[in-house]
Length: 212
Image (cartoon, rainbow, N blue to C red):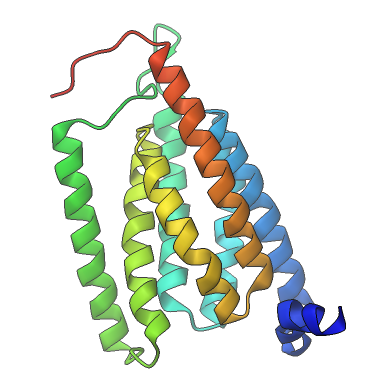
């Protein structure tokens, strides 16, 4: 049991108590945020802002630039999404849950490729191609950038991106030594699958509109 505990949490022995506490708080609010997203609640954004702002600080301190950029982007997109979700017309959301249009699919590809190029440039500039995790960071960053953009626009496909990115992040963060965050992504994966099914059920019970 002691060996198993050390395997999971031994790396925290070298961490400051404040950083461990902040990671746990960030994980808590991150989980709450995803649960609110599943429920299609606007509270997804204020809770997400708390989580991402803490992670930006921690990841900058830990020199994980790709992960830090993801959370900085989450922070900005949470403000943008919060604004979009508050907009209503005749007491109904202007951007209800829907599927991506052909134009939005193309925009998703553009965001994905652009993010890959941007993160590659950042890692190259700071000479951070020192480990294989940097390449995985680049891919997950691009995946999550698209997922967050689609969530802000209330597109059901956002869950697919979250599921793929979360599954990759579980072993990645564990390998990096962030056990609590790794557990967070495990729970994220389960919630994302449940969220996709919940949003799909909502769409099936809603009159369909044509996609352009």
